[in-house]
Length: 186
Image (cartoon, rainbow, N blue to C red; front, side):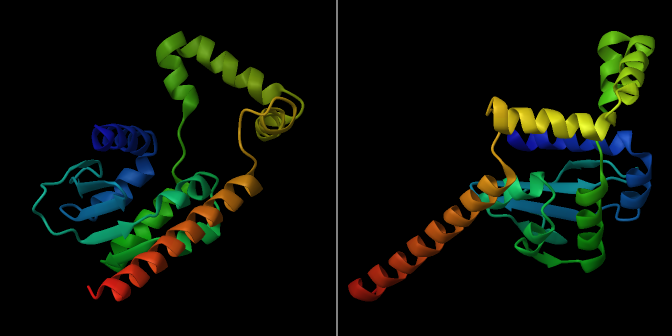
């Protein structure tokens, strides 16, 4: 179910960014697997640049192992988080995937028009743009409100600290497992 949701979301964003479809279409037939424990999702690039779920027994051209603790850092576009992704395979396809992950943008206005109609959606977008602080300033103001005044979201430094704690715990568990194996002779 998660793979289908990820597939539908990814294709939606790809179709909103036509340039991305063109870039991916050059990798038609190539397979990418994302392992985000405990989940694993494999996609194959279609000739038009969209992606489809890959067959289970197909060896991927690219494999990316992403510790779950990296997800919040990737969501906030922490460039250092990309270094912690373990990846193997076709370097050109991998470079394209990383480029897309940094540059794909969801066009919320286009989706809003499906709910409200084009004219109302356009007016909402124009209203947001006409706000004195601008859309990016508005986003920052909302972010500050949700992290400071009415804490509904975690602060970036808290997310990083949490991710580091999870990584430290994972490493400690691995050391403990190794010690148990040594003590039991396995």
